[in-house]
Length: 319
Image (cartoon, rainbow, N blue to C red; front, side, top):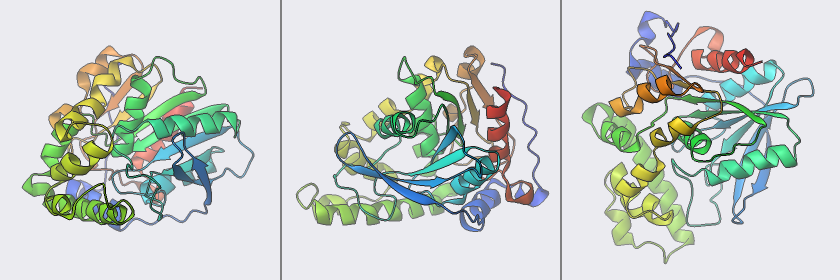
């Protein structure tokens, strides 16, 4: 598909990628009532799903996936859930393994390419919840998971009608390189602190899986992926994990209508994270690259973000 021309024009004080990213992550508030459901996964572990519903009974549902060390109460999920609920679509905001306030039962957790849990969730919505229409929307890490899920398989359930990927790190190695640059040091430090805290709790539960010496060797996000993410999830090392889990290689095979919105001033994304060639060659792939927006910072009117409104417009445009 041709590259889409973006109409996003923020107020001048939100044109800064840094300001829009920080405001969206630390200042924005959304009130939304949610009901929790615990889903047992195929491998016996669990995942917690936080539901919010349309005022009217709906046969449509949007699945919302958060970013690195996020959870289902983050405003970038609850904002989308609220908007879709108001438009007669139920919403299930997913907490990845270990992200709902309770440590999961296995040494593994979640990662940028772990699509197997999404497979279980979609099947649950179809077989148990009886939804006839399912939309997928992912943020950052969650966006990469959705894109990989759609492109790595030949057959996606027919109930999955559309997908939206926001601030998608389509090339994980490139995104990792960007996160390690000085401009992103505050973000990288915050991510690493949260990841190490979660891993420390996991080590208490699984004392034979990692030594304290190995844990203390983790100084960067790439170190974390080298010693934990890769090893716990069947990869050789961080490089192998990034290569096999990056969604860009799967984009040509996507057959579900999919919208990607990646801001050009997103400091987390490398040039390889903007899949222009893939979008031009795949009629199911729509790429929008606003000049502004930072990382998930598409601030707009009435506390409804531009990317949330675009997601609703996109699914409605499909009929």
